[in-house]
Length: 123
Length: 123
Image 1 (cartoon, helix red, strand yellow):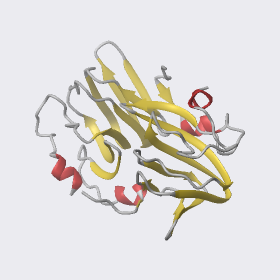
Image 2: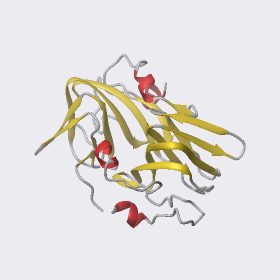
Image 3: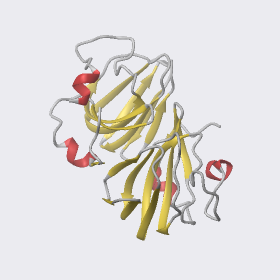
């Protein structure tokens, strides 16, 4: 997979019409940089071997964990550690940048109607 | 090294008084997310085994390569591939986010008065 020399996340958001459908913008080493629009509740899941970084580009997001929640607003950055069950919830539409390994399945160990293949994310 | 649960790049920029002195904000897998303020010309260098992602948060940056230049403005994202000689140049002050392996020496195979140890970057 090759990527454009210069990616422009803000312009790429215009191409995204579906919620919870990540789009890969760049690869740096073994990680993908993705963007996504979120709204509503995702699914509880975890990634056994992979951290996942969320950077809030617009709006706000609540990261639910089993024993706490983390509230994120525009400009905030938060890492979901590997192996930890989590569920992102966006009351209103939220735009995010994600950094995660190329190997990460975005719904982790769970397959749901929200699951998008990496081929879809690269499209 | 442990990092705050939530990092706020825009606020962290206020803490940076030196140009070309990266500050590590987060670790995701084997990569660090850093921010830096740049002004002027850096040093020609390369990273033999490590890609380096530049995301322009404010201002603009020219990435010089041996046979071309890439012009980057606010909101642009660009990956310097491993092994490729490059030199970032900022005519005016430019704020960037960087993603690179924890192992990356920011001046690559060159040591100059611009070189900052990873301990300095984590401070």
